[in-house]
Length: 171
Image (cartoon, rainbow, N blue to C red; front, top):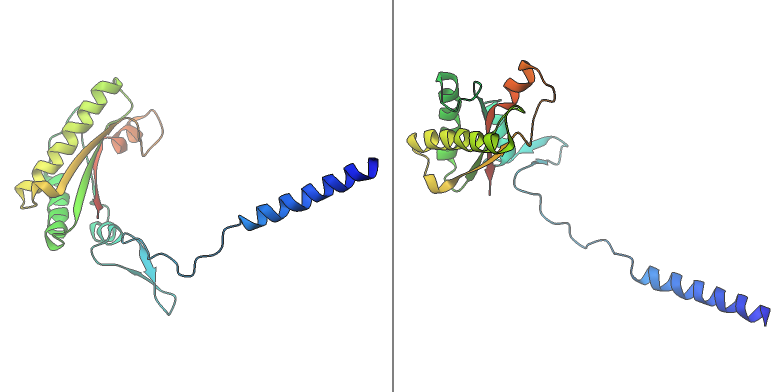
């Protein structure tokens, strides 16, 4: 009787292994296409950025995809205006692309206050883009308030980096 239980256990183990191997995923016959927002690799190994992609937008903006604000402010100054003009030119060049302007705040203040301030910052940037000829239906806004800091720290340098509006292109 003792031998039968060992045999039964071994049979169950083998049957379970076979069942698990039957469930193993197989490699796809064809890989899915590259996402449109990334660089692709050419035959010679070099990376090529697809025109009109998010990677192209970031490269063309050279840091001007983000504008910064003073404490408790959401007005567009001359530096911001220059960055937004560059963004608007790119968006006009690619009329099928849409964008989201993300509004952010530093860690000071309540959650509700910072969400409202982030929204005013995002809307301020959007309104400026629209004033430059970008169709309003192509630009959405979202406020993250203080929830997504880019710089960690409780000092003026960190706070200044977190008071921003970032434009991100979407398909």
